[in-house]
Image (cartoon, rainbow, N blue to C red; front, top):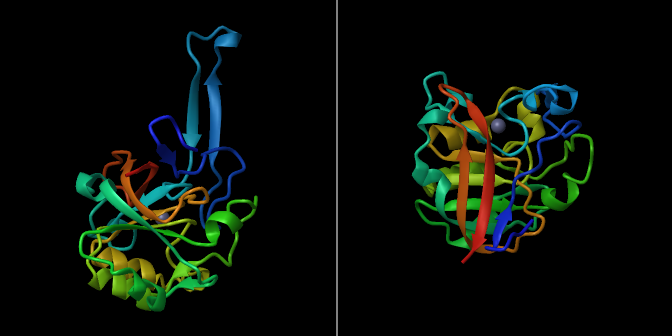
Amino acid sequence: MINKNNWIDISVPLQKGMVVSRSDIKFHIERRCFIEKGDVTNNSNIHMSVHTGTHIDAPRHHFVDGKSIDQIPFDVVIGPARVIEIHDEAAIKIEELEQQSITKGERILFKTKNSQRCWQKNTFSPDYVYITQEAARYLADAEVKLIGIDYLSVGSRAETAKTLPETHKILLSAEVWLLEGLNLAGVAPGNYNFICLPIRLMQADGSPARAVLQLV
Ligand SMILES: [Zn+2]
């Protein structure tokens, strides 16, 4: 969705029935006050995992003493970002990254086949494009600030199933913050202004976030 100031919303809608990771609870929103029924206000409750939809993983997600989401530097989530298109239909591998001249401090958002393929379905897509462990090491060594991906995890389904989330650990231990659950279907590769603020959930391992890009 593009508005008048060329801001593009790359977050996914939070709504009943939305796809979540298999380990997470379903997203739930419920109105408890209704003006039309005589209440003074409309008021709703939500019940969800902090890893639902577009969200940021903090190092605390995989490390007991890791930084929590309230400790994220604003500099990580506000500034220039580069959308890189990945052509490999299975995974983000070093071979494609090496062609991109990735430099220290960059915010990188990967547009993969996931944006077109996975978000169109009402059920979880286990064959999403993920970041290989080798590519994660490459990105950690490059000292990027933030990595974004267009489905619900940076790591493969097999990693998660074996509870060996190495891709997450490699990146989070290097303090690369992870932005998961983007939809980049309508976004061309290139450079953008980027804002993505997680909410201030104290000591939490992650948080939902609104992510927007502006053409530069
Ligand atoms: Zn997450």
